[in-house]
Structures are given as structure tokens and as C-alpha cells.
Amino acid sequence: MSEEKKPGWKELPEGDVLEAGTAAKFNVAGWRSEKPVWSKDNCIQCMICWIVCPDSSVKVVDGKMTGFDYDHCKGCGICSHECPTKADKRAIVMEQEKK
Amino acid sequence: MPAAAKTGNEAMAEAMRQINPDVVAAYPITPATEIVMIFAQFAADGLVGTEYIPVESEHSAMSACVGAAAAGARVMTGTSSQGLALMYEILPIATALRLPIIMCEVNRALSGPINIHCDHSDTMAARDFGWIQIFSENAQEAYDNTLQAVRISEHSKVKLPSMVTTDGFIISHCMERVEMLGDKEVQDFIGEKKAEVSLLDVTKPVTIGALDLQDYYFEHRRQMAEAMKNVAPVILEVAEEYSKLTGRKYDLIEEYKLADAEIAIVALGSTCGTAKVVIDELREKGIKAGMLKIRVFRPFPAERIAAVLNKIPAIAVMDRSDSLNTQGGPVYTETCAALYNHPKRPKMINYIYGLGGRDVTLDDLRSVFSDLQSIDKKPLFNYLGVRD
Image (tube, rainbow over all chains, first blue to last red; front, top):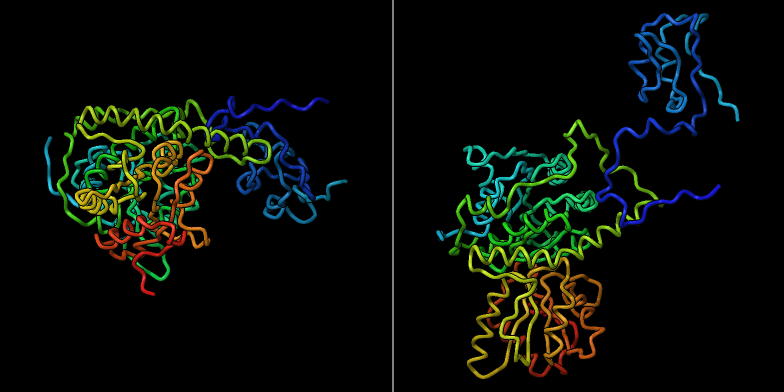
């Protein structure tokens, strides 16, 4: 694979100004060690995970939780910790990432 | 042109009023307090349309300036010494984001020991942050330099911040005759600020100041170096236009009776006024004395300095700050560097003087010129006016 041609200082926009929102285009979750796994059957659609997620990684469609964006989830586990479902019917559990 | 009696601080505050910046964020510090205090009164009285932000520290002041400038605003602040030191972390960020912030800065000794009086150690410590640095000899120059700095900094080939300095108490608190332009003349001269990008423009969202690692940081630093190279011609262009308005001519340097000088000093700021008196006196006695005043320290006008100093056999470079590097003050080392590659290098010695506001008298400067008449007997590094 040939190396990407990066702009030199003469072409580069001045002042470290970039297009906004570009993080959405990248996988920034490479260092996640545990990932949240969602069970649709156990989910009560309370939206607490969506409120607490620090990385906007809870995918919501038409007001419903539909799963996780694993390109941006860092595996912090707050969603699982805050999920109010009962112990025998967990909607979000943390699983070790496979190597 | 209306003239009024103004202190250096008042002159700078008046310049700020006439510039009418969009945002001023500042924290008071002696001897620069009055600049922003007087300006805050202008803001409170509705004489300016400025959003005045009284922040809790100079670190916050410069941070607020960066944010406001990134939003596209014309931004000013004022500070001195420890206040400037508290801004150091943010100063190079303003440069890197290419934000033309204007700072009215009053030179004051850095602690410690704690001291509130003039020397250049605060400004000199900020010399490698990519800010344009303009030194003023008196209140008139403080006023003129502040107005010109807006045009210089905002020039499309520059986009770098500027600090315009005066000397603590000597200029900041002494009242002098200052000729001022009319408010409209100032507005016409500075024009409207055109921001190429703005954080507040929701139709064109941008990220400003993202992480810039091994692959891009160097290119961005190279751009800043190029921008700094563009500054000198812009300063001359702006000075030319300003002289048409005021009759007062400015340059990167000022030559005072240098053309035929056999002995000369190099100095910055208020000391230049004192030196002119001594030089006039020596000239009357037939001694060919002169002075090179450096008005613009950043960018350092090395070629211009070399072009005028190479002809003079004996030179004393005056430093109102000490680098404590065993090799002289910053003005000395840079002046030496400017001449090193010139085929004709004069003999140059260094004087560290006036630290912590130690008075610089006519007699002190007479002694320097007297030393220059037998320069070979003097060591390279000298301290003027310190008790042994």
C-alpha cells in the first residue's frame, strides 16, 4: 500500500483549522478492553444508557435504543453500571474484548 | 490634531477606546492596571461597544481572548510581569491558531525578588512565543504603536498576535503630551475585522486547535515562521499609511545620529529618550555618538541592524533584562548574531542595566559612552548601576 500524500506547509490551511465533526468518520475505539453487549429482550427502553454515555455511542432510532456504536464506544461501562434491569434479566452486560 | 496630556496607560486606554474592540478580557496588575481599568469605565459608560470580561486570572484572560478571537472577534487585553507570566501557557496557542489579539503590555520586572518596577524581563521571556513585539519610547509611541498593531496583526499575510509595550511607571504613569487622531480617523484606519473562519458561524462549522501530532505539527510551525517573516514589510506598509495621517514616521528601528557615529549604543524603550539627551550633549563636544533604537524586537530586524551597525567601531548593547546565561542579555546575543555573518563586525559589549526599576540617569549613560571610547579595556559583559 502506498503512503498517503500529506499536504506540505504551503498547501495546508493555516491556523490548525479543520472541518468539524470528523471524529464520526473514524474508529476511535481501538483501545477498548471490555465492550457492552445489549439484550433487546431484556431492555426496558428507559434511555438511561443514552443519557449517561459519555461518547454518544448508544444508537437510538425513532426514540428506541437499538444497540451500540462500537467505533466510538470506549468500554467505560457506565451504561451497564447504570442500567436498572434486574440481575437475572440484564439488558447491558460487559464482556471482555477478544484479542 | 488634538493633543492632550496623557500618561502611557491613559494613551493606551484611549487607543483601545478608539479601536473599540469586540471583546476585552483582562485582569488588573500593576503597573498595567489603569489601562484596563480606564477601558472598563469606557465600557461601563457605553463609549465602546465592547464585551468586557472581568476574568479571575490572566490565564483566564488570555484563554477568553483566544476563544473570542477564534469566534472572529477583534480582541484586546492588557497586562504586565507576573500577569504576562501567567499567560505564557496560552500565548503560543494564540499564535498557533493565528489569532491577531492585541495586548497592551507594560514592562515590569519578573519576580523574584518581588518588584513592581520597570525592566524588560517579562516581555523578553515571552520573546519566542510568536508574538509580534513592539517597544515604545514614550506615551505618544505607545498610542501610535497600539493603533498600528491592529493593522499589522490582522493583515492577511500575518495573522499573528501583537504585544505593544511601554516601560512600567516611566512611561505608564508619567504624563506627556500625546497627539491623538479623531475617533472616526482611527476607525477608517483600522477598518473592519475580517475573520476567515469563525466558531460562531453555524453554517460553516469548524474545529480549531485539534491535536496536531508528528504528521502535521511541524508544518503548522513552519507556517508560523513564514508569517513572522511577512511581518516586517507589513509594518513598513502600515507605518507609511500611518505617517500620512499623523506626520509621525515609524520603522523597525530608529537611527539617532548614527550615520557618522564612532561610538553608539543599542537600546529599547524609554531609555532611548534619556540616551538622546546624552548623545546631543556629546555631539556638542564634538564626540560622534549615536544610538540604534530597536522598535520592533519580534520579528528581530537583523538585516537592518547589521546594515547600520557594521560601520560603527564601538557599540554598547543595553539590556534591561538579564538572561542569566553567562552570555549577556537577549538584545546583546541577538544583535551579535545579526552581525556574525557580516564581513565587518564591530566590537560590541553588553550592559545589563535598570533591573527592577533601578533608575538610569544621564550620568549612567555618559559613563557608557565614555567606556566606549576605550572599548578594548572593557569586558564583554557589564552591569551598569549595580552596587559592588
